[in-house]
Image (cartoon, rainbow over all chains, first blue to last red; front, side, top):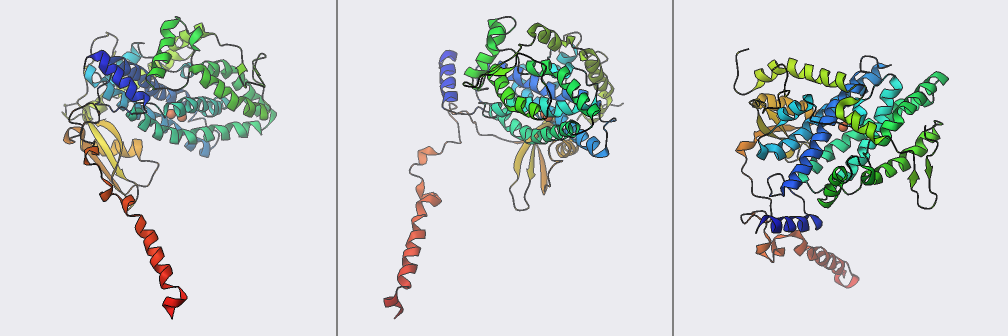
Length: 317
Length: 121
Ligand SMILES: [Fe+2]
Ligand SMILES: [Fe+2]
């Protein structure tokens, strides 16, 4: 069987619901899409610990501090799990986590737009748990039925823990919503600040993807490979349907005068985010991109002696 | 290494190996695969497994196994030596519980017969 026939057979197997394991034969494009997606997901979990950890020393109560620490530890664990899944896919290319880190530091490895943004108040920290993790679980819930078994196994564990993250975030936001006028104002400010980032979270709809067909083609390829089952726009619509009523029920206003739901179709219209800005942010041009990358690089370099000490060929240090 | 990756060249890899993590989550449960991780020694693998994967649950046993020590049957169905396929043993009901479910209704029938008035006389 030549590669074209094998690919046809592979796609037919995916269509019949068959799951692929790490050592199975797979088309190069399937491997490449998975590596790209899982690296992005894994590194976003790692970089996602940095905005939230800023609030660990400043959490308002011991209870909140412990919960936030547990959440940050979970996110680092998610990164560990996912990078391991990516490494097994990268093995034929003779690459591992150290190449991912090197790419991150050299600006060749992207992470999610939200983790490039500042977290100036406790309300921002709560909002991340509620509305950013809320967005993440919509994506991850959809990916649970994907065709690559090691990734979906990893996601099963991750999604279980994300359930706690969302409730932790909800609990913080609820306390602020039921608090003093100053606390309510603090949450409203955070929401106004974060809304454009939340609308960018799922990425551009295919037709307005920057770079035209090229950028949107990852979505199309992932759909064809049954790695994902919904488009960016479908996920964003689902997110709006879930969260807009909840935000409004707490009496907060969403900073988009054009936001409206069609009563018949249920489809939302909204102010499209500035996708050029999105591209600049994920290209490490966001307000906190440089600081967070520098912090990650510093802890990587300063932790080198620990990795050396723990490696199987002990070196004298 | 003060400026990792800046040159764009291949980075030297740490001398870590892949370990598969198995845990027993019920006192009478089987060892079940949990995750895989990279470590330089079994001790480090055990400690990472506890911190990364098992801190939320009570466990009753924990194994870490170097991946090299595991021989795996191929999972790809197009692989000629794919060993997970037992369909050639058709029919295989003789070794499945489902073929013997009829015994439950048989026993019910015999019990009912035993309890009718004429057999009790
Ligand atoms: Fe996470
Ligand atoms: Fe999370």
